[in-house]
Length: 129
Image (cartoon, rainbow, N blue to C red; front, top):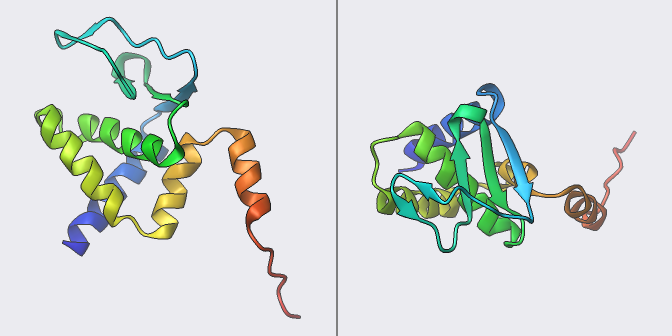
């Protein structure tokens, strides 16, 4: 299971770095009225392949945004998966992330003020010369 999750993370990372997708955090979350025939009531995010954008609702806590980004990337990776499978797998992947992997994905779903606050909270260790 560990290798499977490592490979999945590599694929997620590759899409984030190489695909050209832009992750857009938005407070005015206004997803399309209809995607795949489903009406949205409470959407956390959505992927727009034609415009190479992944929209994430920034009103959610950071870890929920991470799960949502993973969810949307899984739609790109496995377009035939059902919504319930994507939802289940995105939560499983989130649970299996290492701290560095989580930090990598968090970078894409955090606002600049959130990143600055997080960095200021981290202790600084100067190298010993």
